[in-house]
Structure formats: structure tokens, C-alpha cells
Length: 251
Image (tube, rainbow, N blue to C red):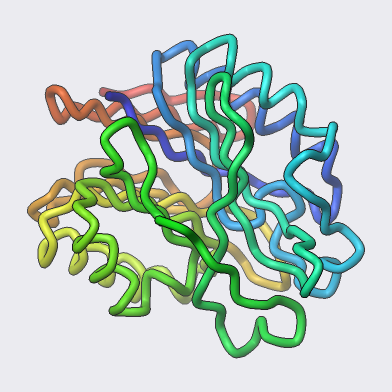
């Protein structure tokens, strides 16, 4: 299985432009044979809590049909970040597109106090995905909540993927926490962050992969978009880093 995390530079509130950028990175993942690709928190709108009510939609929004088609045509699972209106309020969601299956959502259950004026907590039936139900998902603040990682481990997760929006000043703490999770629970851990400005943050990039011993396998820089791909069959990582329209590719 090839698991991929993307690092994006979101355009504030521009859903269609962000979708087009996602399609390019998804295409890059497809070209490299990935089975799943996950994007940062609220990747389709940028992290803009004040705009969440205006931008929120539902999982059947036709603007996402092209992403569904990519999933079905290429047997790939795709996770994108979007504010979702569930009636009782707005949730931070990761919409999951899977081949020939209805769209589902992983909802952010643990929200930060700063988010409470804009979002409500979401509930998930399971919280793990994949053919073997061994991939746990997390959205930003959740990785800091001990109960979240504990729950993922108790459900048999072997992989832990966190889609976040973290500023440069937050990165040291974030990286230390994810390294701790990988060591404590023996999970391969993934970080998908964004770059550029989002929600007033100078986002810190450094999307990363740690093996199940807490060893850093690969990391993108703090300025450019790109993807990281982990092959669970041989533990090899492929890094594709974009910077000012050029690409650096390493194995």
C-alpha cells in the first residue's frame, strides 16, 4: 500500500481554485501509484474560521464530482478538508472519496477553544479507514489530545495521518508530539500541513513521515507545495517537492 500526504498553499476562500490545485497534486499521486492521499485541514477553503459559515457545504456538493471521478478511475482514496454544514452547526470535516462508494466524512471531534465560536464538535462512527481498517485520521488539534491517539491504537491502527494547519512557531511542538505518538504506539505517522498564509498564520509546512519507531523518514520544506509517499511493503519513501515552479525529486 502506498500512502501519500500533500502539502498545499491554499487560496483564501477560493474553493474552485483550490480544487484545481488539489487535482494537480492528486494527479501526481496517481502517476506514482498511490492508494490514498490526504490533504491538510480545511484544504479546500484555507483555514478561515470567519468564512466557514459562508463557505460551508455538504458532502454531495457537485463541485467535488471531478475528485470523485479521479477516485473511481484510479482506485484511489482521497481526503480533502472542508467546512461542512450538518444542520446543528458547522463542522471541520475531511471528505473521503473512495472508488465506487458513497462519500463519507471524518469529522473533527476535538476542537480548540478558539474554534468554538465558529465550529461544533463532530462525531465519527469509527475513525479508522482502509481495507484493513488500520488507518487512523486526525485533524490538527486532535493530535494533541491523548485520548485521540489512544483510541486509534485501541482500534488497531497501524498508520496515523494528521491533516493540520500549523504555523512556523507551532512546528517544533507538533513534530515532537507526532514523533512521540509513533514511538509510544508503534504506528507509522504522517503529517500533512500547508504553506503560505492561512487564517492569519504563517504556515510552517514540513509535512513529514515517521516510521513506527519514531524515526523521521522524510520531510518537505516550509515554503513549497509537494507530496510524500510511503510504501508500506518496503518502507521506502518518495518525496516530490515543488518550489517556484521547479520540482526536486528524491527517493
